[in-house]
Length: 304
Ligand SMILES: [Zn+2]
Ligand SMILES: [Zn+2]
Image (cartoon, rainbow, N blue to C red; front, side, top):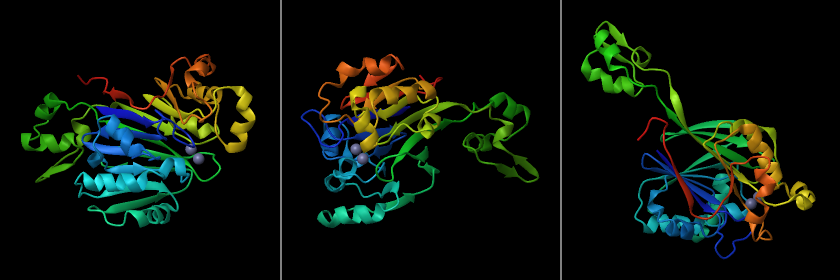
């Protein structure tokens, strides 16, 4: 199962009860954070999450509302006694930006590992997560992330018996390893069924509505998308500042066909985003207004 918690839903500046953009996921004990706006560590505490359990942090881009919470968060991770490394992923310039912020947090009890991404789409395999970073269209270089948890096919024990595969190899074969026993070679495809539907969360902010977003969010369990402005009276602003309206986000969702869309990254001027929800639901009915602490446990279709 994959836990998803939307920590912050604000764009530009935090408001009382609305932290800046951030989203946390946990799968198989590995925590993945996307963005860390100011207040992210408080939002984590409010959601009952430990800052110790952050293994990977992905950054969409280096505007302050997406990364200014990092120095405090790193100190908080250290205070939670983490000694294992934390992997940071983000557009080019990551190491320079993070090291600048770290002037105020120079000593940490864990290492930082950097992975700078480039190109239009980059695939990353990280500790059980299959991540696609995709370039979107903002004022500066910005990426969205599709986080996938693949699900292998079912192990066919009867077939393994029939083929006379020794029991000691079954577990390895189930985990995708090829085994040799003298002359005999056993490959996973001999005993594994077709891959089953995995889990997928696509996260994208800040950007104009570009086609790659709908492609990457196709069939997602949750599509988390920016909705900076509630109605079309802000179309000009959305174009100028390279953001989206609820209607534009819903248009992407309609194309992508996720199970649901959560809107996030609201303008500070958008005090009551729920008043504009219909601007999205008339195009994509399964739209929800993101709220800090909103969460979902995603399970594989055959998981109890
Ligand atoms: Zn932003
Ligand atoms: Zn931005």
